[in-house]
Length: 425
Image (cartoon, rainbow, N blue to C red; front, top):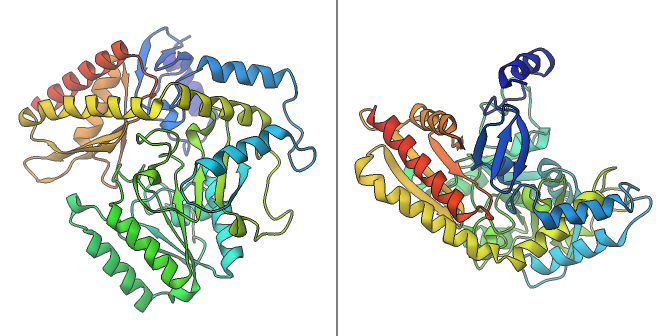
C-alpha cells in the first residue's frame, strides 16, 4: 500500500475542507514514533496536536480501555450513569486552581467544551456578550469560530458569526502589543462597543495555541481577574491545548496566582480517546437546569477510563517535571544555533509547549515560507512538525512528554540540520 495511492482516494472521497498537514498515512504508533503504511518511521513532534501527552498507546491507558471494553462501551450517562464519570469529575474538581467548590461536566470535543462554557456563563450571569482575543483558537463550531481570533482559514466563507462576540488584542510584545496596549483596548471596547454590564465572560488561552504559543503575562491575567471581579464578568480559561502537564504544571493557570471561574479541557485529557470537560465554580455550573447540558456521547465510558489512566501516569511518571526538563533541552539546542541563524527571532515556551519564530532577514517580516520549508525538510528526514501563528511563521513543538531520551536526541539533530539547511539556502 502506498501513501500516494491513498492520497488519490482521499481526494476523491473526503472534503477538501479537511486540511492535512502531511500526506503520510499512519499504520501504527508507539510512544513518540509513528510508522506509515509504507513502513517508514517518523518521530512525532505533534502528538495529534497535543492529544497524546502520555505518548501513543501508553500501556496503562490501553489496559484501562481494554478493561472498560469488557464491561460496557456506552449507556449514555444521562440515561444509565456510571461511577467512573463521577470519580473523574471529583478528581478534576480537586486539581483545578481555585479555593472554591467546583463541579464538572463531560462532553466530547474541545469545541463542545467551549460551547458549553459560554452557555453556562450566559445562563449564570443573565448576560450575552463575550470577549475573546486576537489570535486565539476556540474551535470550528459556530460559537467556536466566532470566538476564534483568526479569519483564515477558520471563518472564510461561513457567513455571519454569532453575535455579541468581541475581540481585543492579545499582548505579544514581539509584535508590538504590550499588556498596557491590550488593557487600553479593552477599556476602549467598553467605551465604544459593549457595556461591561452586558458581558458574561472573557475567554482566554493562558498560552495561545494556534495563535503562536504566546503565553499570557502574569500581570495581564491578574488584570483580567480584577476586571472580571469589578464588572461581574466570568473568566474562562481555555486549557484545551495547555492542560495535563504540557506546560510543566498540570494546568497552565497553575503558573499564575489567578483562578478562572470556568475551565475548558480536552485533547490530552484521555490520551487519544475523545473526551472533553468543563469545570467551574459549583454555583455557576449549577445555573443551567437539568437537561440543559450534556450530550449522547458526553463522558464516554471509554474516554473516562482512559482519562483516569492518564491522570495516574502524569502523577506516577512525574510528567510535569519531565516536561520542564525536555523543554529546557529543546530551547537550549535552539539557543545554541541562534547566532548562526539570524532568521530565528524568538524561542519561547512553558514546560514542553515550545515554539521558535522565524523572520525573513532581508524584509524584516514574519516568514511563513521559512517555517514551512523547515517543516517539510524535517518531514523528509523523518520528523513531524507543526506550524502555527497568525503569520504562519512559528514552528510549535508538541512531542509526547514520555518521549525516550534517545529519540529526543535524534529529533533535535534532525531539527537543527533542517533549520540550518533551509536558512543557509
